[in-house]
Every structure is written in structure tokens, then in C-alpha cells.
Amino acid sequence: MSGATRTGKPAISDRVKSERRLGWLLCAPAAIAMLAVTAYPIAYAIVLSLQQVDLRFPDESGWVGLQNYQSVLTSSLWWTDVFNTVFLSVVSVSIELALGMAIALVMHRAIFGRGVIRTSVLIPYGIVTVVAAFSWQFAFAPDTGFVNQLPLISDDMDWFGGRFSSFAVIIMAEVWKTTPFMALLLLAGLTTIDDGLYDAAKVDGANAWQRFLKITLPLMKPAILVALLFRTLDAFRIFDTIFIMTAGAQKTESVSILGYNQLISRLNLGLGSAVSVLIFVAVLIIAAFFVKGLGVRNPEGQES
Image 1 (cartoon, rainbow, N blue to C red):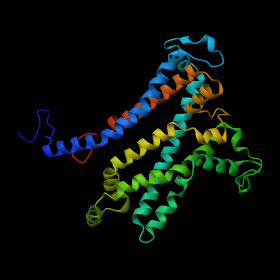
Image 2 (cartoon, one colour; image 1 turned 45 degrees about the vertical axis):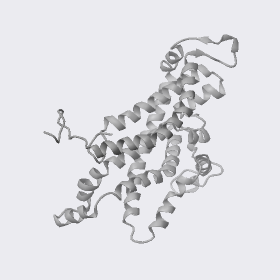
Image 3 (spheres, rainbow, N blue to C red; image 1 turned 180 degrees about the horizontal axis):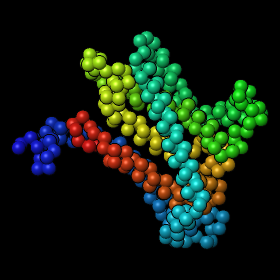
Image 4 (cartoon, helix red, strand yellow; image 1 turned 90 degrees about the horizontal axis):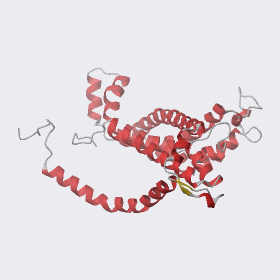
């Protein structure tokens, strides 16, 4: 059996091996540069996380081993912030996936004005996050905003006075800002699907919903997973929107806000670095889950 290995997987041709080798060589300079820029800060954060480094009490510095990690992981504040971060990430990314898919389908099937439509859709993503957060904060402010003037909404509604009402505004701002990015990634996946498959399905009597479930979704799985990966990693590190709108008040603090408070506000570099390392580990776990756990496959049929 020359066409398969002992494990039953199809043998990789010399051409594919050569292309992969060339790909590694082309990516190597960028990878080395990224490692040079990121490796030192990560290593330094790990070293600081093993020490008691509080700039308010410089004379009390010293090695404490894993004590900082123990303090963080046994703190109820950490787990509250983890819940907040996961809740915001899951809800916002789920909404963005649904809206992004709908927008991508519209852009892909647009008969005229495709360039104008795509440019218009991407405008929110081009706005700086801080500017977008301030805009949404002003819109929902009880004294300066217009939202409370809308029908069915109380004039004295304090959107930032409660935990989940604050979450609602934060999620709306995140969805409005980043749905275009999700739509753009999904649109790239839609363009790879052969229209002949849809024509053949129509001949067999499949309706639009059946074509979407049986053709579009299966063939778009790699694009969907890539979009979910990028947006989940981005959402898990949410900082700007929360910092502008609530600054972590009303129990809306995320893990990034917690790290900021420890490092910048309280000048506790040891605990702050431990929080940062834990966030980094969480990001790695999320990335590994999407890449390995969900089994994205490349065109050659091999797992990426």
C-alpha cells in the first residue's frame, strides 16, 4: 500500500512536503521577530509572579514561589471576574456569529453595490474601541443619552446602576463594534463554496434552509472556527469597553481589569503579574481547544 501509511492515513506527497517546508521558511522570520518581542515580557512576568514585589513597600520584596498564584486562585474576586469574562465572551461572540453570518450572506449575495455595502458594514470596526465605548456610554447615560427618551424605556433608567444592565450595554457595544470583523471572516469562507453545489441541491428539491444546513455550514466549518477563535480570544481579553463604561463597578470587572488594578492602581507587581500569567494560560487553553479539540482540517485532509 504505497498510498497510505501504517496508521491508515494517506501518504503525504513530496510536493506537499516541499510546500510545507517553504511555508515554514517564509514564516520563520516573522515568528522569530514575534518571539524576540514577546518572549522577554512573558518571561519577566513569570519571574515577577514568583516574587512579592509591591512598589508601595519596596523593602518587603522577595521570592514567595507560588504564593501569588495561590492568593489569586483562592480569591472569590478572581472567580467572579472569570465568570464575568466568560459570560461576556460567550454571549457577545454567540450574537456576533449569528449576526455576522447573516451579514456575510447578504454581502455575498448582493446583486449590485457590493463594494459600498461591504465598506459600510466595516465602518464600526474601523472606529477606535475607546471612542466607540464613550459613544455608547453617552447614549445610555441618564442625563445626556437619548436611549431613555425612546418609547417603552423609563426616563430615569440607570443602565450602569446594575450589574446585568451594565452587561447589556457592554455586550451591545461589543457586538456593534466587532460583528463586522466576524462577518468579514465568514464572507471569506462563503466565497470558497462552489455555486454549482447549490444548483445541484436545487435540482434535487432542497429548499434554502436545507441548502444552508447541508452545504453552507459544513463547508464553512474552518472559516467559522477561525472567526470564533479570533473573536473569543479578543473577547476574553476585554478591557477598554468595561474600563470606559463602568471601570469595573457593579461587579462588572473582567480579569483584565483585575490585572490592571493590581499592576497600575495598587502597584502590586507580584499579584498583577500572576493574574497576567493566568490570563495568558487561559488564552493558550482556548486556542488549543479550537485548534486541536475541534479538529480543523486543511485542504490536504490533515489536521492543522
